[in-house]
Image 1 (spheres, rainbow, N blue to C red):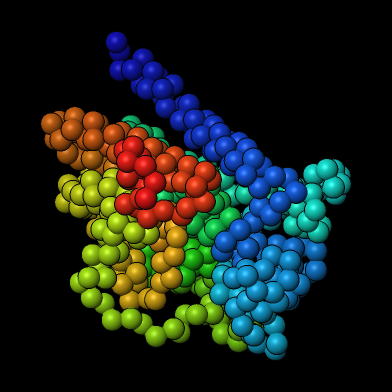
Image 2 (cartoon, helix red, strand yellow):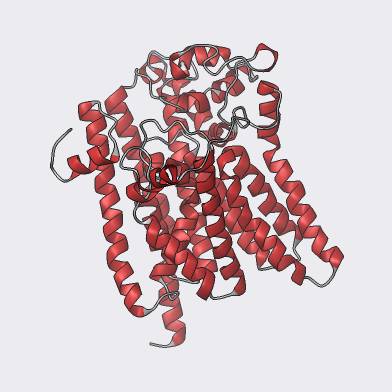
Length: 450
């Protein structure tokens, strides 16, 4: 086979990858719609848990044209309370510690869903008021799931460009299916975790492009805008901004003059401020501070036992115990930092490890209501970096023997998470139990409900 025909064949093999990721997102949207309609019914309440606080912004912005959330909270009743479930904010407004940025990302789906509710009447909207019906809720949720499909495709492009591995598609899919990202795509898409993956993947991809053409201030501008939006979507993801900051510090000084170096830095900083502005203004309007409500809560003392619980708990936390595929992913990032195909790739990987470590530090020091949840939820935002580490393990960063082992272990861990999630949902739906990891594992291996 000639080199030209081989290249054509490889291109043809890769051309279906974007379509496959979109098809995966569509399948998840169907599963979510069928699941929520069968459990809640079209006339039931489809927005539950913390999603009620995120969702409240949508009818307030679209139907009321304001950010007075009291009437939205009276309908949605987050925390089981009406009007002021999170206390009184600035000027007597209802406080809301949850960010507005995810709701802005869901606006197209919400608008389409409200249109369905209006056109279909009670047969579609159910018993909920306008703006809260089945169409509005499902439209927002389906759009959020499709956004995750877009984020997955951006992640795949980042992997293909940074690692140069044809395994980018497999690594992206495994990072999606073998981590809590799957739960917050198909089960609870109206939390901030799904939009956060999209925002992080865009920031990383745009940063990679800018780092490979460091004198282009316009590319750094888009990287900074995405970085500001990352913080607007989830304040806890601030540590991941270390990736663009490190790349700025490392690659920009290679430009030919000091003026040429200052322009990208200024563009990034200015754009990051602009990207965060919508959340800053919302926070100031509701709470009188540009930092989201709750950001000034006293820090807790980091302890070894807390660290062990964060990583290895058999309860509701335990990032590694719930998501064992992160261990080979982190190993892949470390190896990529040492053996990457370019200095930019190596710096990128090392900054990624530092960013993930920063997320662990925040988990250690920031009070966290670790109630019932599918574990490791604070780390869904790191999914693109998990995918990058997996691509390194599946590609040429490691030797042939390690690569063969990875191609056995990583798919097995993916299947395990799929089985774990199925067991978790059976316990929730059939037994009304929001189980710990230990309870899920016991159920998954046939030891029954305990």
